[in-house]
Amino acid sequence: MSRKKAEAIVINNNIEVTILEVKGDQVKIGINAPKDVPVYRKEVYLQIQEANREAVSADGMEALQNFLGK
Image (cartoon, rainbow, N blue to C red; front, top):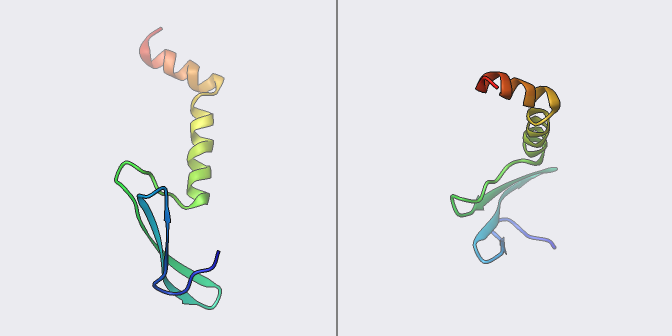
C-alpha cells in the first residue's frame, strides 16, 4: 500500500493513519484513534513487553509476595 502526503488509511473503522510529511527517508505520520486504544512506537512497545515479562518472573513474584507480606 502506498500513500502520499495528506493521504490516509483507516484501520478497523476507528483508527486513521495520515501521512503528514515525507522528507528524504523520514516519514511523519499522524494517528487518530480512540483514547482506549494504546498507540506506541514499536521499540517502545517491545520495551514495555520486556518490562512486563520481567515483572512476572520468579524474582518479580517473590518481590510482590514480600511486599504483600506473604
